[in-house]
Image (cartoon, rainbow, N blue to C red; front, side, top):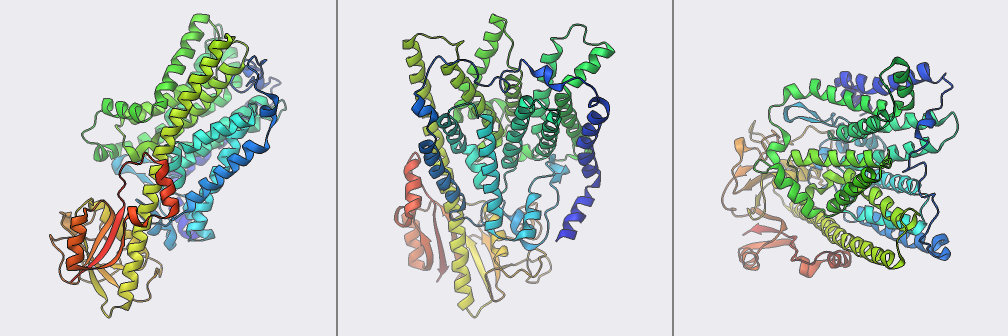
Length: 615
């Protein structure tokens, strides 16, 4: 498999060359041109507020020393929460979720996934899912793949903790608790396919490395700068809009710092400015190289834009309204951000040269998704990087507001402010927990239903003397993609999917002697009352075939994937078919599932599934 990975890398050698050389050139240029200078890079940042002077001013609002210094109780509570969080990440997990064919068809079979440079629909995220090619060298199992997500989660928690190292530990854990329970974070860390998880990790490390660079007083501070550039280079190639976030952040800082220089466009001033702002210039160059690569490698070849397929009838205004309605923390953030900018203008004070550019980068990132009209309950993870920056931004502002001397409020106003902030926090947290609990529960039952249906099929077909069977999918709540993803999971478990292209029975993918859970050859023909173009389950996958038919025939398996099914319809099926396996959430939910449901909004929840055989 290692040789195949190397071949995949060589297939995109032009991209790989540019990707590797860009940060190397930036680091080498600084070492050669500037490092010999006696000028200290750190002098430019002496007035930076967010990191350099983070929470150092004299406190007016005093919290009891016992609460501030107590470590054991908040650490214990957060550790219990983290244990439950990690347990739920592993609970009922299998490679049966949407888009997991990108693992079951490739790395789990010993075939590395090629870099996702999809020129036809304008996608350019070449590092996406590539880590699993290397993880598969260690082992092709749920445990190995999930361990990597857990490792990333722990590193991210540690990094956020270091960023917030000047606040009381209870406040740090409260910020982390809020962050980890947001639906965007839950989706990103509970799933395998979401590149936002990598972006969150590297973005956090960028902020931490920037902070360490500002704090360091030694000549080795430049290595933190190099770390920022390396993390940025990794972050950029996991999702297209990242270049906007980092580009706007660096441009904002450059403009702010340039505005403080008189006659900045002389040779001497330009050279000094480049020394002082090399880290921001480097980020801008990395972002620019990404943009140039996209324009050369992808843009000329776009034939059908990715977002046009997903939301063809949606406007940018529709997307903006949907996001604000479903993520009210955005409103809070926009209000606080505007107030801080207006306050700085009215009072003629310096704005924070780290926080505000980061906020501008987050806003720009959000605007990209609004412009692309990307929205939907399961698209919330798109703005996970925005929510990371927003949470840190608001966390800093709230603590600063309550603790620092420049906000000298009368005690009554102070108490009212604390009450309102606490109330707002609890409302937002309650909403996040409800949505996240529902997302987790739906994911677990989606996976569990498919796993149990596949195992029931395997058990029945193993005992049968026949080798060929028909699966009929009920039209209620399914679409072509639903059948396709289930078919790929069947194939991963050793079933052969009938392909009529050569009128033979064969596997639908070229695999390395993969047998799954079966001990004999079993072929399944997939049928449903849907229209399939050229007998393809989905137009973009040629070898997974589905066939149109309105009704099941005798001895056909009737598959009802997790969803809602009216009791009368189930009773009719039971009268004419044999029930092989079934699940009703209201009757069969496990203790953990019931507990998760209690944390949701407790609206009607349907994830029932059945497998019948027509008599």
